[in-house]
Length: 354
Ligand SMILES: C[S@@+](CC[C@H](N)C(=O)[O-])C[C@H]1O[C@@H](n2cnc3c(N)ncnc32)[C@H](O)[C@@H]1O
Image (cartoon, rainbow, N blue to C red; front, top):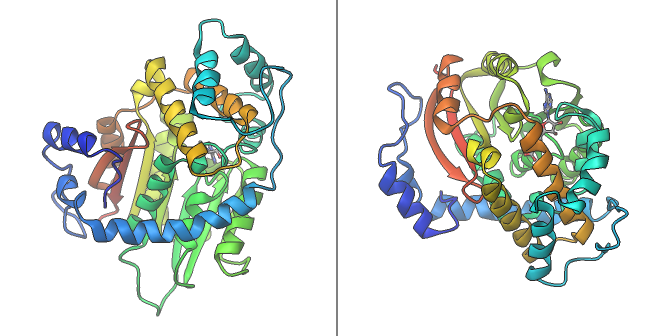
C-alpha cells in the first residue's frame, strides 16, 4: 500500500533506504516497503474504507464549535484561498509573533502535553484541521489495513486497542467493515472520547457497544481483555522515556501472541527545525482546506500555534531507528516502517512473536 503522496519522495526513500527493516522471525512474510508501495490493490481497498468513514467524521465535527480569539486580524470564516492560509501560518512562525503570543497565552493556561484540558481544547479544531488532511487520512488507512487485513474470519470476535484515541478516527476506522470487531479507546481527554464514541456508533451501524472508552492515563488503565491489534498514533512523543517504556511493556502484555502493533510518531526534525514544522502545518492545513473541511481562520491559527507549543514543550522525539530499538527492547519484532504524513512522521509495523 502506498502512503507517499509524491513518487519522487518514494523514489528517494527507496534509493536511500533500500533494505527493509525486517526481523528474523515474523508471523507473516516480511514486506519490502519499495515493493509494497507499488501494490495498487491494497491502496484502493484501504482508501475505499476510509472514504466510507470520512463523511461520518465530517458530520460529527461540523457540530463542534469553533474557538474564537481576540485578534481582529482573523475571521471566523473559511480562508478565502491558499495564500490566506500561508499568510496566517507565516505570521505564527515569525520571531516574536504577536499572533503566536496571543494564542499561546491561552494554551499556556491549559497546562502541559499530559494535561486533559489542553487536549480538550485542541480537539475542538483537530478534526477540521489535521484530521481532515490527506496525510493524516493516509495514516489512518495504513493502520486500518495493517491491523485488520488478515482478520477476516467471521467465526470469532476481534479486539483492538487505541492508545491515546483522541477524537477516535483510528478507532472508527477499525470498526468499519465486519461487525465482529471491538475497540477499546483510552485517552486523557473526555471531550475527545465523547467525539470518538459518537463516530464509532455511527460507523458501527448505531451500536454503542463496540467502542469501549476508558478515560484517563493509559499507564494506569485497567484492561479487561487481550487484543488482536493495537494502534498508538502521535501519542508516544508526549511521554517521557520512562513512560514510553512502561507503555510499550503494557501494550506487549495486552497483545495476543501474533498480535500486531502500529506505532507512529513525529520525527525529531519536526521538533528541531521550525522550517520543517512550518512546512508540515502548511501542508496539513492546505490539504484540509482542499478536502472541503469547514475549518476557519481561527482554527488554522489555533491548530498551528498548538503544534508549535507541542514541539517546544514535549520530551525529545525519537528517530525511526530509536522507535524500532525501543520496540524491540519491549519484545516486539519490527516488520516494516515508512515515513509519511508530509514526510514528518515515522510509522512502524510491529508484531508480538508467537
Ligand atoms: C495528538 S493526539 C493524537 C490522537 C489520536 N491518536 C489521533 O492520532 O488522532 C495525542 C493524544 O494522546 C493522548 N495522551 C497523551 N498521553 C496519554 C496517556 N498517558 N494516556 C492516555 N492518553 C494520552 C492525549 O490525550 C491526546 O488525545
